[in-house]
Image 1 (cartoon, rainbow, N blue to C red):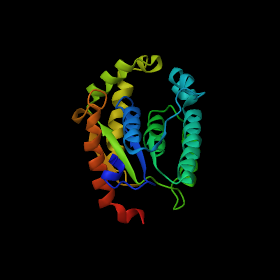
Image 2 (cartoon, one colour; image 1 turned 90 degrees about the vertical axis):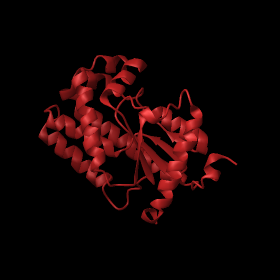
Image 3 (cartoon, helix red, strand yellow; image 1 turned 120 degrees about the vertical axis):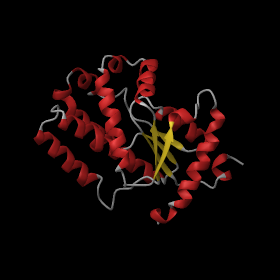
Length: 222
C-alpha cells in the first residue's frame, strides 16, 4: 500500500506549494509527487524570457514579467484540472498579485496604470467562481536568515546579485499575505522541522498532516 492509499488522499487532489524564494518549494513538490504518485507542475523559470531582464531593471520589466507569469500559471491551472487533478504544483497563482505585483507598485517599480491593468486582468481571470482553486495550499515558512542562506547555497547568479533588502522585503510581504489568504485551505510547514534531502522518510509525516487537513476541509470542496 502506497502513502496515498494509506492516508486516503483522493486521486483528484490538487495541492499547491507556496513560499518565498529559497524555502524549498521544488524539493517539496518532487517529494510529495513521488510519495503520492501525482503529476507535477513546476514554475518555468529557465524558459522565462523576461526574468534576467527583470533582475537587471525592475522598473522597466516588472509589468511584462507579471503578465507573463499570470498567463502561464492560468494556462497551467486549466491544464491541471482538465487532467482531473492528482497534481502537486510548485508556486501558486495567488502570489503573483498578492506579493510580487503589489510590492513593485508600492516601491514604485510598477507604475499605477500598469498595476491597475494587471490587477484587473488577474481579478477577471482568477477571482471568479469559475476558476478552479486548489484543494490545499502548503505554505513553507522559515526565518529570513534561513531563507537567505538557502538562496546563497543554490547559487543562481541573478539571485546572488540581488540586494539582501529585496529578500527581506519579500519575506515580510509573504508573511503578511499568508496571514490574510483565504482562497483555499492552508497548511503551514516550517522548513526547520524537516529535511527532505537528508531524511526523505519525513515526507510521511507531512502527508499525514495533509490527509488530516483535507479531511477537515472536505466540506469546502463540495
